[in-house]
Image (cartoon, rainbow, N blue to C red):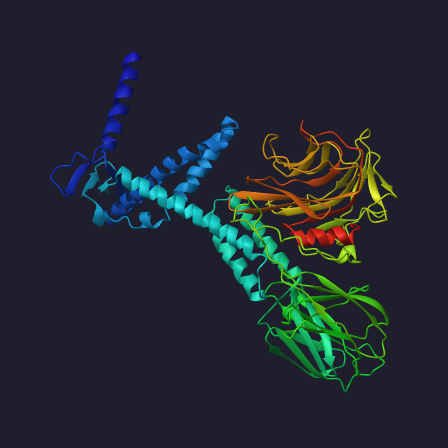
Length: 631
């Protein structure tokens, strides 16, 4: 039996050797060079096989590029591996695999890799092999390619420069979100973002950041409205407004009416002039023209404009700067009522058919001081109300990195009787006034829930109601939405508090690394995952009285800047490093925090809670403060 086993093993071994045997039928040299299959300093010696000589050559070239990309990955990963030193070993391994794969993919796209060609090789060898057992022919192609340490360092530097450009481009896309000037710009930027996303692997946090930006750009379409006014009989002037600024489009609107005929639309600059014949319209009917403008997506911008046979111009005026120059495309709001108009290129605005009464006329335009004037509209004659504003600058705050956009300077302005629901709506994600309801004033349908004995109180900053929280009951307000949107480094939170003390104020829960506000040793502090990261703001002790608090955060590249405003005034600014964040599931105000630091509940009242998807500026903070009862 033993002899039989040995015999079988010998037969198998002989078969394996026979299978591996081949005959070199043709070669580029009489003997295979010694460098084939060896390791040689200053060179990469690689080979490839294929069913034809061309296939073998291509396989060898692909292997050469792969090894160079692998060399770059190994060197770069050794410098970045420390970033995951705090993770578990399995997490570290997965991180390394993902990063190495990402680096290989990106370095393979770099010009240096693409410039690799056989013409630069310092030696090559090929041979044709014939395998007797399978009667198959295979080709081997080997390359001896010069690749020194200097070449590797040059490629690593090129890779790092490429990464820097990607981060700069991503930051530029974030900045452009506030600078769109037309519908076509938005669509073009969305297309550019989708193409840009191919630069990142799905595990790269920047991949999801691009997803978020695409969503934000698409969301701009929801914020576009048509501001229209009937300037005279048979003529309507329209402009497109993206939140607080005017934008343009090349899309001619589609017009439909229940009575008007001979309708046409033409462009004068960014203004759309609609002309029509109202002869078929009966004065006693509600006559209108529907204006629809395509965005090139499933979203259509729509406005129903009611027309009259006789236009009664109730109010008109001009908005100018201090030098007397007209201020075009400023948003004009009538308070009360909230009717809006937009100034034309000559700075003029117009309101038709306004009911008699006393009105505040407010002019708002980015980078200009918000101003108001007061007038009485009789209803029987046209009233003129002019407004003078001035441009506000954006000075740097001492110690601030010049790469950051500092908040606008706080400008002294008289107190204004403003409607809190109508001020600073750009980027306003949610607004909870807590006036005997937890409903979001933005109409999102999200309702805050009062937990563990939290209750409404008649004591408030604006004379209405607030939420009273108990430290003993650990009461809190729960909002069934995360509120903070990825990336969380760009946000603002504004609220009023009575009874500020050490403890937990708000956080997004259900994920890690989401920003939360605590007070530690009488100082406000924003923390993420780790208790020792970030600094506390410097500010005076908060007295036991209603106090308006605003936290803003903005980011560029790998850094962020946070600002703390108290009662409308900027009191401190902090810099820090950006880190990736996880998606939370809900948002809570009060109650206990998740960490040992600042986790205790607080006896306090909270009112007028605002959450923004952008960093608001100093003028906007002061406007909110004044509108909600500040002095």
